[in-house]
Each structure stands twice: as structure tokens, then as C-alpha cells.
Image 1: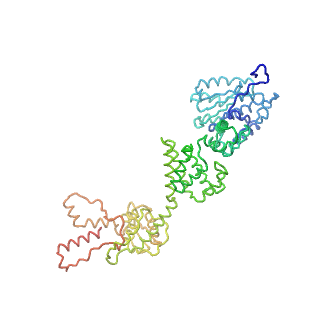
Image 2: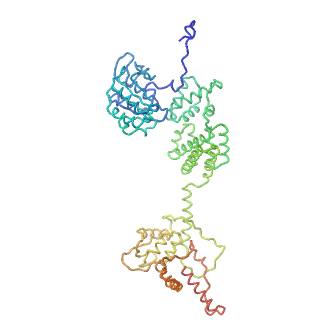
Image 3: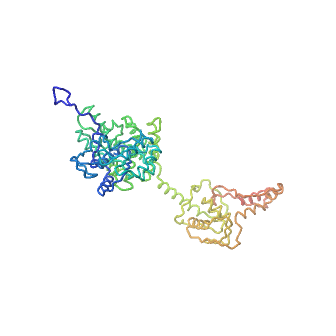
Length: 602
């Protein structure tokens, strides 16, 4: 079209098209990242097994609507010479209907946006047109975008036609929310999942388009755009369009480098993020906060910094779990591979998984916090603090070592004192930790001396196995006892696991195998709890109390003792009572004897 009537060569320039529209794929060869779908459709077309309904699902910008239009072209393809050879996947030339279909103006290819036409009336209008034959093309194709937005009534109205459409009708649905589509609709369609485009494939695609646009852009800049697009081709082309415009508005010459892309997107410097991650994993909070502040001052968003750190942690974890070969599969490809290998060598897998959890929590808080920078700093401080903590493996090893030392100290202590001994205030008290000792333990250097069943019960108390000690006192009726062998009868309510646990603990604590046998025959000594109850009931003070309070009952007897039984050499004993001592009155002698009796009971 001429702008100047006197100059017929002067024409109006074509209107500008954004890259996402200008480079929209026109055939299946132009599609990237969807080879499995193309292969399936090619086989179906070749075997003349073309479905009557398709549903395409995937995130934004992966090519659902574009694929639907290409599929409509393939179904109605007629060569430029007018020869009708049937549906064709190969479309080397623009056919008779191709341009009109691509521009959404073909009378037999009807596109409907379900987001704006959700009602049953719209679907009924569509169904009314189904019974009419196509005007020009081979098939009448209905493309319904965002089909999940249809109402329940609209879906119900569509079901019958969708199940048994006329042979000249094809349906193609597209949706980002496949879960919202009723199962009754899904079961009547052939489904294709269009997945995100991987960063390397998307980077290559951007490089090819930049070359066609005569724009020089750095490879690292292209990778940043591909990562920011999160697998969406449309988003990637929109960002590339913005980068080109911004660069030309500044100088218009030279190469678009990573700094320009980073400034445009508000991204963090990749190298500095590696430094920041390394500082956090070393526990250097000062360096981490300084690096974070530098990135924030340069325009990087706190949430973006944390996301980049998550990418690095994920890459390091992959390298640690799958070996150095996994380093090349990071977001930046080979650019991060060597650094990932070097950093992963000095880290434990448990530390990396812990860092991932802390960063995920910090990212969620940062996105919701009124002050994103402060929340980001707190997340980094937590990560630095956690770096100084032992990993679960290290903590378990330390606990096992302390437990082993405590077991040996407890089982080597004598069962009863040979003679009263003074307490040495400077002596070191045995170390006790509040955990259950491991079941398997190396035999102690010296065997404990267990000459009675009561010694076994006391050892269980020393080893802080309160459950076992309580069960031994309450349920065990000893038939015979000798060191290395216990024959017993279990009282009512005794757990079935008691003999096995007793055998395990004795082997662990004494370093030798014990034989614990259970007899069903009646008899055996009274349980320790019953003996204690009988002793208390025979006490004159208790008898006197029951006389004073008629109807009172003794329901439970608890043994008053310290939580940890002291070693025998730490017991305080009263000096022997000498009845011939003139310095003692008869009352004092009686009081001392009563006090000694009560201490033995306790």
C-alpha cells in the first residue's frame, strides 16, 4: 500500500509483531519439546486411527493453542494444488486452508474461549452447529480453550455429542487445570500432556531466534531468560523481546550481556549466589549477610536470591547422590558443573537436605513477609547457625559413644558394697544420658556380678530402663536363679515381649548370653512388688494408721528413690549402733534402729 501517490514504490511497513506471535510454530516440525506427542499423532495418522476428540494440558505458554491449530490444519490439509490426499502430518507447503486456520478465520475451524463463554447456552449453540457438514474443509473442528472453565451444566450438555459426534466433527480441548475437567469428559478424549520445555532446549531456541533478529546476546544471558521463563516458550520470547528493546534503547550496539539481563529481571549474580551459598554452608554469617546485602543493593529480589540458592542446593544434592556426572544437568549447564563438583566433595548429604528444608521455609516466609529483605536475612542466619550443628549421623554416633561409655561404667559397678565407705566429694559422678541404650553393644571389659534377681532389677534401674524394671518387679515370679540363667513364671497381664527384652538387655549389659525360660507351672517366689506390699502392710505404723482410719485401704506402694541409683561407693551408711555405748540413751538407740530400717526399705 502506497503512502505517497506520486511514489508507487513507497509502501507502508508491516506492523510490528511481538516475537511470541512472529515465531509461533506453523507445523509439527516447528514444535520443540513435544516429540512424544508428535510421534503418537504421526503413527495415528499413518494408521488412519484418528480420534474424534483430543485434550491438551500443560502450563501457560507451552503451546496448547498453537498445537490445536496445527492439528486442525493437519486434519484439513489440502495441498496448494488442490489435491485431496487426506489428513497429513507432513505439511511442507502452505495448503489451501492453512493460512485461514492459522489466523483463526476459517469457517469450519471454530475457536471458543471457555473462560468467557461458560454457560450451557453457549454449548447448546455449538451443538446445534455440529449436525451441519463443513462448508469448505474436510472436518468441522471445534477448539475450546480453557475448557475447565465450563459450568457443570455445560459439560453435561456436551457429553452426548462428545461421545458420538458425527464423522465430520473433531473436538480439540486445551486446559491448564486438567483436574477440574470431569472424568466423564476425559474418558472420551485422547489426552496429551505438554510438559515444560527444559532450559537447554529453550536456550537453543532463543539463540536461533536472536540470530534471525540479528541480535547478539550472551549465552549466559540466554540461560537467565530460559530459567526465568520456567519452561514457557511464550514467556521466554516475551522476556527476549524486552531485553532487545531495552538494549537498543540504551546504546543499540554490542552484545547483550548477562548484566543487562540480570538488571532487567532483578536477578542475583550467579557467581555471587555461589559465594553466598558457600558462606552459609560454612556457617560464616558475617560474609553471608554482606553478600546478601550487596545483591539486594544491586537490585536482586530477596525471594529470587533464595530461589537461586535452592537451585544450587538441589544441584549439589544431585551431585552428592548420583555422582559428578549429574553436575552437567544444573540450571546453568556446564557453567556450574566444576564448581558443583568441588563444593559437593566437602559436604554431607544430610547437611544438604537440611539446608534445602531451611531455605524452603525461608522462601515461604519471605514471600509473605512485609519486609522481604529482613525475612531473607533471617533465613540465611538460620542456615548459617545450622551449619555448626552436627548432622543426624554425627549426633547418633556421638550418642552411641556416650551410651557405650555409660553402659560399661554401670555394669562394672559392684552389686553391693563390701563395707561402708566414705564419700569422696571430689570424685567424678558417672555420666548419664536420657536415651535408651542401643541393642547391640560391644561386650564390656569386665562382667557385672549378678548373684540375685534383685541385682538384675537394680541394674535395669541403673541403666535407666524404667519400663523393664517396672515389669520385672510387677510380673516376674522367680522359680530359680543363677548367674547366666533365670527360670520364672509370668503373672497376669505380663507383656509377651518381656522375656525377649530381658535376654537382650542382659546380653548387652553383661557381655554374655543369658538363658531366660518361662514356665507355665504355678509356684515361684512372690513378685518384688507383692513382697514390698506385704512388707509395708506388716509395718506397725501402717497397721496403726489403718486402725485409726477404719475402712482405709493401701492401694499402691511406691518405692521412694532417687531417679538415678548411686554407685555403691557413694552410699552413705549410718555408723553401727553399739548398745553398750553409754553416750546413747535407750530412746536414741531405738530411733536409730528405726531410721536404719526405713532406709533399707527405701
